Amino acid sequence: MLQNPVQATAPTVLKVHRPSTVDLIAAELRKAIYSGALQVRAPLREVEIAGQLGVSRSPLREAAQRLVQEGLLTAHPGQGLRVAYVDEDRLDDLFEARIAVESHAARMIIDRNDDDAIAAVEKALARLKEAAEGDDARAIGDADLDFHLALVQAAGNAHLTQYMSTLVIETRLASYSSKEGYVVRRDVTPTYHAIVDALKAGDGDAAADAIREQLAAAVDRLTGKLAERGVEVDTVAEEAKPADGYSLGPIGQ
Amino acid sequence: MLQNPVQATAPTVLKVHRPSTVDLIAAELRKAIYSGALQVRAPLREVEIAGQLGVSRSPLREAAQRLVQEGLLTAHPGQGLRVAYVDEDRLDDLFEARIAVESHAARMIIDRNDDDAIAAVEKALARLKEAAEGDDARAIGDADLDFHLALVQAAGNAHLTQYMSTLVIETRLASYSSKEGYVVRRDVTPTYHAIVDALKAGDGDAAADAIREQLAAAVDRLTGKLAERGVEVDTVAEEAKPADGYSLGPIGQ
DNA sequence: CAGTGGCTTGCTGTCGACAATCATACACGC
DNA sequence: GCGTGTATGATTGTCGACAGCAAGCCACTG
Image 1 (tube, rainbow over the protein chains, first blue to last red):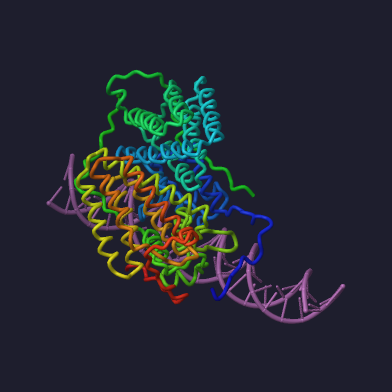
Image 2 (cartoon, each protein chain N blue to C red):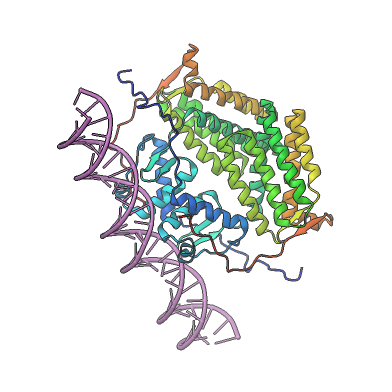
């Protein structure tokens, strides 16, 4: 090599990662979608949202484009932005993608014999069991999704974790899109134990199968196929949220 | 059901999907990164890029945020946008994600016994073999990535396909980030045949193993571990592209 | 001569305003 | 009465401009 462009200075302190305004707005929008403050298929008027956030339209639109890329918002020229709607085809694709990511995460954990990771997943399962004892459908749903996200996070792959974060929010979106309304099963824990047991046993295929079974059941519930077949399960429903009057918190200082 | 909200009108024609300006710009930026016109770690000055594209800064910035979300660009406050740099940690995560997606795609194809899908993959392999006979490193690399993308496309999952598209571009970015320069192996085809053979044989585990082996070798090559270990492989290198003077085509009418 | 301080320059980040486009409601004609 | 055409209102898409921040250069000081 003619020139050796060495690192100018070995950084003693990691460079501070100050979040940009667009980061904050995007996070706020995701939270709003995840919590249902922004309803499915609802058009979001930019001046209104920007006003609530205390920013101008420009950074809001930039942040919105990130969610478009994630598939959480859709943009049709002239019609502006709408919260995405998860139809049946996309639902299948979404859960198939989740199977790919989650089962691979399980295999990664098993291949590494990562006890800490398994412990983290068990902790998430404990929180789910605790939530399932209550009647708050939203809390149960949160704990459910948190479990799946924790599984992927435990695999320690930042790339997959970010993708999974999007998949989680889109799953919640699918729940909102369901004609059955927002319903969660209460008796979910047995299937989850199967996943954790497979992790402990170091059986990747069993873990993958358990995840597949778990998610396939979720798809059936969301598409209403369980009801069609007359299957009765113990479910908890959530009242529809206030139609409007939602307000997003202003961007932190 | 009390109310049956039937589809208002069965759409006889599919709704036209007119691409927005932001779509076009984002696609142009991706192409520029993929082709190397925008070099790794290069800061992109907005006025300049916007001028070349014949648009204002606003839509350019919005499009750029999409690429930020994809991980193709990075945004540090006050310092603007830079083409992302794939360091070693991220490289590992990237290829592990590719293993997750591609091996699952293979399993999907096998589970469905989808002969058309296998035919499509074989077609991509044929194109790769044809390119490998030449000395154009870029063409070989394109055909290589096309093969992997074709594999995922053949699985027929739009969600995974979109994710894979990003992974493909980021892989190209990793090649540019490599200190070895842009180098491709010429004798890749045996490993690819193993993948296709496993697809034909309907052996999902074998396909997954072949993909893992293939991608692990790619990581070794990109990190220079092959050279360290003194492994000699038949490679084709590409001259470094013109440092600047790149110009992006204007947005189509 | 090395290090520090301030200045300057360029760019980004954000804003307000204009023009183009779409949806809605209404009037008209068949 | 139904469909078509038109007018209106609102919202988006785009632009140019200003303020604020960061990097780089130069002069100054120890």
